[in-house]
Length: 172
Image (cartoon, rainbow, N blue to C red; front, side):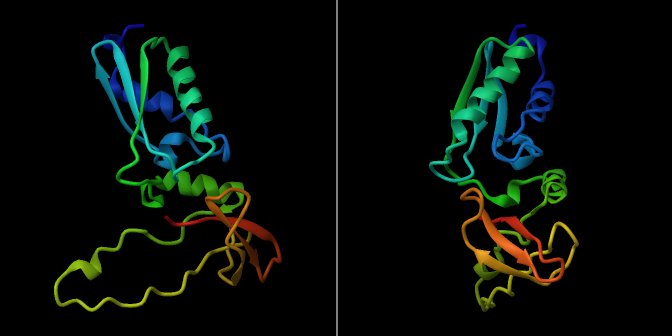
């Protein structure tokens, strides 16, 4: 298929079916790492941003994106890695956060970007303590066990009510 036969909306839809290799219940679109889709002549240009610098899954993600678009008939696919602005969990979709929770991973519990302190004369308040809800029972009675979970993007928590350990997708 040439690029003119596919729409940008179709490409976004196809990319919405590409699973993150580390968390297969969330797509690379819902994770927020696909930044843009455009056509440059016959080339489909997909801009992606890694969740953090040096993310080991980015090569697999890039190959999966290319393969998914090739399956749909796009032969000329170009991936562009954009590092700035850096990826943030604020870019995750609500559907993606719900998928994480359903998979047993607590989604980010707060927004990363807070511009309230940028206004002149506004005193910056201390951030409230982070409350992470257990994805298993919903309890907010949880405790950080380790800043390092099963992947660098996650921290390990435990629920003090149901006693189950769980990953928390760290805000960044």
